[in-house]
Length: 191
Image (cartoon, rainbow, N blue to C red; front, side, top):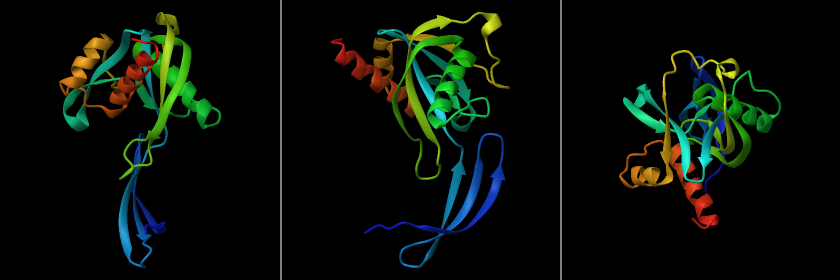
């Protein structure tokens, strides 16, 4: 039977603006020691912005770690600009990210899932939302994008997303999860 591991030492190998890497020695249930490298990032959010039940807004950007352009739902890290308990801070981050990335404000923002992104090496947890009743923000109300963040904002129909999914062209799991939520939402509405 599996049992809890106990951390006996922790050595921070790297600490930067987005994440840190810890090298941990853990004691296993049988008394032996093992190493666990852990990326600590903190909470993040992702949002499926629905223009209507048939169209949503996505971003496409270059992602250096995978050396490719990736189609994604707007997303980002919860940071010092977001206040309150974790639930409130995540909602604030979702609203902020929608402004920064696609220049809209949601009339309604509903949480539909949260979970760990890659439990084998990181504690990062993402809260996912669907945004509706979208209002475009003009220049005076727009927040600046993150430094070095360049992206294309694209509107895609549900049928186009289905074709991308079936062709294996969606490669971001938060976006695939949002697509599944969109599918369930449409099924519940008889579409």
